[in-house]
Length: 194
Image (cartoon, rainbow, N blue to C red; front, side, top):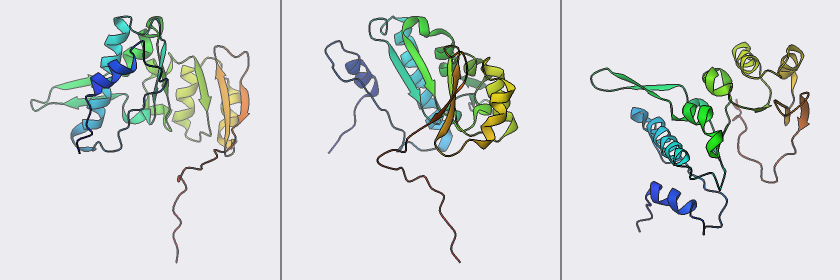
């Protein structure tokens, strides 16, 4: 059974005015890690959406592009056989120019320090969980004007399910407690047994 679909066709069908679906999930679970193929495909997908945005496809149907594990896909470069390096910068371009076209970017990462400052600085809202690493806290500090030193000092002591919501639309940072999901993910650290 051949269940393969053309990704471009799937995206075009999703944005058809007659389509009533509101969520399109594109998973990379079966995409390998060799030869930067994941990064190249993600960048190509972002470039495709960037071009759609420039063609004003999202003006009547504003769209949020969620990118999980963003540190795996942003701030990446690839080198060809002649050692010429190319930046994979489509996500950076979306962050910088696509709001006016109706395409919005939401990124999730455990390592803000690996996201380009130019991309982070375009984010209007930050939902920040526990951060211990100095460089991660500095990345947030540089990118979010409302993240003052007292807010940043609180980040290392946030508990499970706690986060700070801050950004241009909030007069002051808010401490949130997120309810656990009904179906808990299998994200615990395996325990060594003696």
